[in-house]
Image 1 (cartoon, one colour):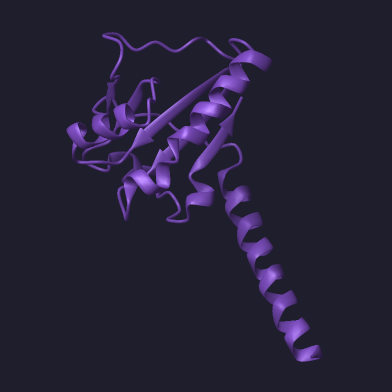
Image 2 (image 1 turned 135 degrees about the horizontal axis):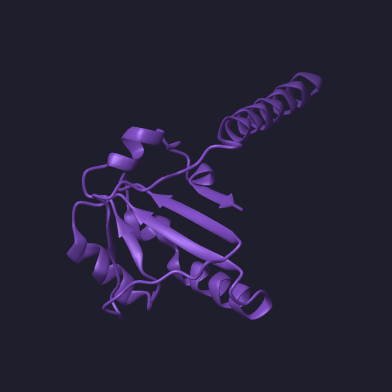
Length: 143
């Protein structure tokens, strides 16, 4: 029994240590989108971002089931709540590593997601910043 508790505890400590390492690695870093990354929107001709003091940047790679990972209905709820509680204070910036703009637009339409997004067809952003493959570390808060 004591061995099991020790193993579980060490796994938790390792997970915390990994998280701490990744967070420390990203503190103070700046993410700059290359000009080759296209901004698209399914509902508007021009994409616009307010000059908000806070930004949430979400990077989604195409490994595995893209639509499963997105959970855009949750993002819609969060964006709506943020716009009510903190109007014009937060930009949500989504960047998808996807070769198919058509597939991505279909997913956005299906999930009624109206924010403009960036599409990185050539994985340039990941080649620059080497994002974690763990979805928990593909969302960034910036001020």
